[in-house]
Amino acid sequence: MKSNRFFKYFQKKSSKGNVPSPLERGWGEAFFTGFLFCCCTGLFSFTAKQKRDVKYTYVVAKDGSGDFTSIQSAIEASKSFPYKRITIFIKNGVYHEKVFIPSWNTKISLIGESKDSTIISYDDYFKKINKGPNSTFYTATLLVQGNDFHAENLTIENSAGPVGQALALSVEADRCSFSNCNFLGNQDTIYLSGEHNRQYFSNCYIEGTADFIFGEATALFEKCVIKCKADSYITAASTPEGFAYGFVFKNCTLEATPGIKDVYLGRPWRKYANVVFINCKMGDFINPKGWSNWQKTDNYKTVFYAERNSTGAGAKLNERVSWSHQLTEDQAEKYSIKNIFSGLKNWNPLKKDY
Image (tube, rainbow, N blue to C red; front, top):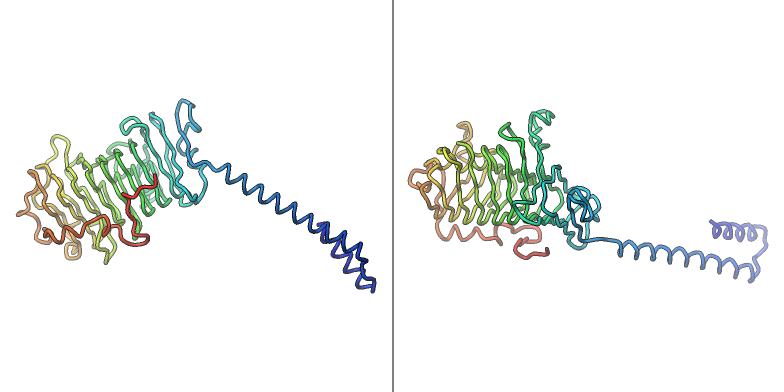
């Protein structure tokens, strides 16, 4: 503000025909230079302090021994769009909270102390939310919208019980990975969305009743245990038209609770559903037809359902529906991590930055 007064003073003098003396000009220039120097020094000092204050590691503990007692508090304290990964270590305990990873909180890792004892649990469900026909999508215990998310050694649970649609996990982001996690629920346990989004699950346990893995994203499940808790459907994919990969299960084990005897590998939520099982072991509860056509629509003409080298009592491949496929060895080789996750940045979840 003072520098502006100096300029106005000089302009006023000049308009009257009086030119400032060299001494006046010298004082004005010196003041203005000093003013700029102080401003820039303060700005640089503030920026440097900000950089020093950024934390990339937090600890959450219910007993107060960490930085926070709730997971959401740690997320809200995390820097938006960080250059490096932010890791939130979560000590054992049951965290009864809905956890939200917003789009600006990219590169977040949630690492539990132990898979079975670090539990995120909530009990929202369709009728409880009561927001109309799309209430399902508000029910998630863990909602991920930030890209490059990673979770490990956690149990993520929707504890509402068999009361209809109730999500444990909803992923609306790209390049998200889950390792050594439990996903517990009933109908609609895991929702994976986004036309170009990619997700990777390794060594996870996933349980549910109806359509408990569903959505439009591209997802690879490797060495996972899929537990069926009702005579129903495992997948309900809504793969977009023209996409080569939807849900891919490789080297997984399909199990069921006692008394379950009529489970389908999937049914098409939308007409271009794409689901493939490769080298998976299936119990005798799998319906010999393998795949169901949703409400006898014409979706069977446009879906792509396939298997390769299914084993176990449920692998009655000769009895599968005629519109499903058995992949050749050459065809199955195309289902590599590189091919499945090709696209923007050619993401490889095995190249870890966490």
